[in-house]
Length: 223
Ligand code: IPE
Ligand code: MG
Image (cartoon, rainbow, N blue to C red; front, top):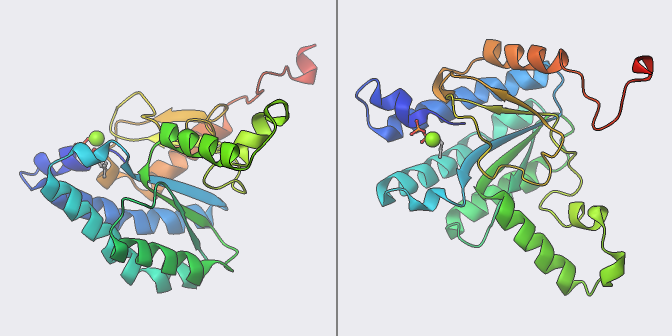
């Protein structure tokens, strides 16, 4: 969800105003994604590298996450949505972690869209954590395969993403779903995240639907 800062500075507003706007528009996007039949929507809200930002910005973002987690439970639940978390949990404040875990527990049985909140998430960190889990499990070296790694990531039951959308014109994926995105379709748009809309999502999904996903294979009719 990139571009909040630029959205704010273009309006001579503080960066946090951009983050606030970005959080507000997410609600409508989640609901629209649910209407489209999307089963999993993950949002990269804060990366393992974002701690480098000014402390006011970091604490403002953390307060925003906590505010949303504490106040938006009913709305997601009424849409049968389920909240999942991906990231390191050990560097979050106790109150934020409690809000995350409460939201996860309260929506565990919901069968609608799964909203995956990535906070203090980094793909490389996720792989480091996976390696630690595998070593701690005492796995035989020769038994380790790709499936062992997939099953040791943060959310082993969640399928790899079909489509990754990056807003704000940057052409990279910045440590997002590093392992899981091996075959994801990438979609880049210049739209800044606070300007992203249901229509923007429709456009991304239409672009995705027009792609030919072979995953290393060849379509039968091409032989
Ligand atoms: C939001 O956009 C991403 C978060 C870390 C919340 P940015 O804050 O990166 O916005 P720009 O890139 O400065 O415009
Ligand atoms: Mg940015």
